[in-house]
Image 1 (cartoon, rainbow, N blue to C red):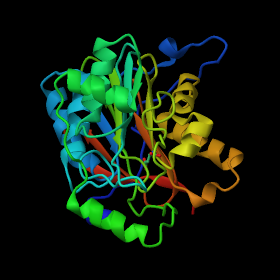
Image 2 (image 1 turned 180 degrees about the vertical axis):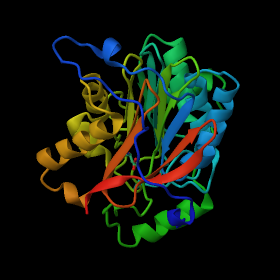
Image 3 (image 1 turned 180 degrees about the horizontal axis):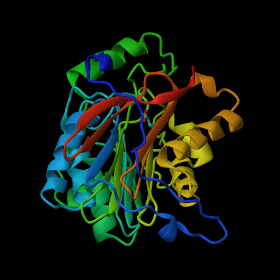
Length: 327
Ligand code: ASP
């Protein structure tokens, strides 16, 4: 297991000088309330595998590329890395030994694409992008998603690496399904970017919970749950036990809270509090949110200590410990 703490750490801080004006739900004042951009471009993503992913994304943004291209290019990095065992190629399989992938993407116009329960394709995020760009639909699943990918030039590959297969065989000895907090048997990459044009997009891709039931789909490919962007307001994304995020429609909630005047940090905290209030056994799970607004302010919050996120601007590239609810 990788020791996240070997990396540079900072503290969660909001950007001085930028403030979010209050607005009322009824009047939907998001456009007026959005503070002026104080910094751009900005990329934020979940966990330490966000560091190399952000590097790829900021390259696109520094060349005046679009946020949607940056997030796609960014999350492709951990998707292709066999040592990241929670995303794409090399991901842990489900309990029956299948690596099944979930991903979604959303652009500055609110267009979105998603794939769920996809097997054999290394870059589900790019299939999701193609669903968005080339079909009248938002989500393709399972065999249909694979068929669509193959028809559009993606190659079928075996994504189960010897390392992941070995871990699965070890797990099968007891077959005990108990996701362990911060033990990296899940850890999606979710990424949000603000480009130099001031547009926001997001992407989210995962192999889901290790040893999940065959057919289980989490929050990560669900627009509004694992990811949500509204270019008037900002974007939000989630990681952790997806069932809790789905029950509270977490990313949509974070964006709506920002629409109504909260900073990204306050909105992430409130969305975690919603889980605390609504889900009795929340302590058994880890959940982390990240968020960004039109000003380039960012926030992150989680249930348990141990969630970190990568934050990259033109002159900074840091891995930061998110503040947590359970102290
Ligand atoms: N949210 C993912 C899922 O439930 C896993 C994670 O991000 O840790 O599939």
